Image 1: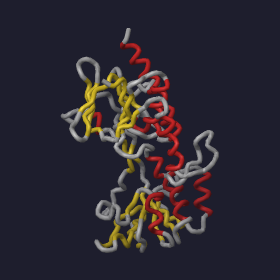
Image 2 (image 1 turned 90 degrees about the vertical axis):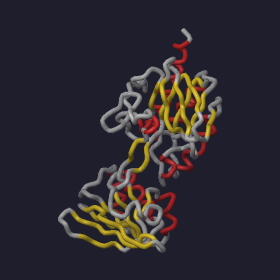
Image 3 (image 1 turned 60 degrees about the vertical axis):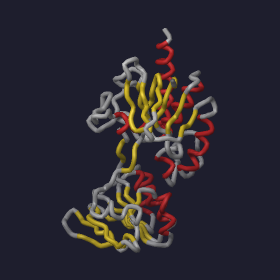
Image 4 (image 1 turned 180 degrees about the horizontal axis):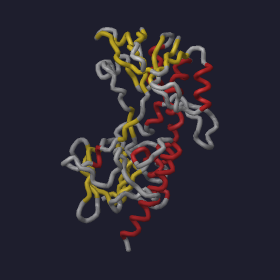
Length: 314
């Protein structure tokens, strides 16, 4: 039986593994079916992590983390987790995607979040064929072309700036007349000659064909008027949804207390309503969804897991 299982390999999960193993736990496994690093690996720019002064893309920023965080014995198992369950003896069962099971004395949920769909007509049909949520991943395909960006937060504006370096023009669509992004980022966008702001508007529909993909974005303004943008691509950044499916039982009920918006309720020690179960990063309540905060959460959760394992010995 594992001393500690960590579900998720983003900044929170990696930090939890680092602190737990460096603090003395010997049998710790982090389950992450993809490449460790989390959502930040798709970011084009990382400039607000204290102590890392050089601006770099998210993938480069996260590259050293796995080596460092596995230095003290953390094991990475490349497997997806379907669900977790609490046993009568206090341990946890972890059911993997392939149906196999593992058991652990303690568990940290660090499953993070994923980009939210915007909900306009044609979004699902053309996702991956002109609709994208990752400028770093897909921006190169639109080099020298015009594209659209939907959103008004830091991510949307930062990715619009990134795309402006690649593309001929960027149409930035936002439903309000003011942005939620930081003043510095907002000013950069407003001063960029390759970015055209389309405010008080939303995307009504995208159109295209099976052969060539997307070729038209229909924008609807708050006053009811519309505008057609003949672009081959649109990047949507309208928020994140937490990944909480793993903590649902076979009947679809959550195994621990949750908030109204689907995040795990925790205290300042990242403890949930179930002894031995901890949460860290975007999945926990009131998460700021920042890398530095997720890393801090992971450290706290790792230390709390050590204290819990020690309490079982008394």
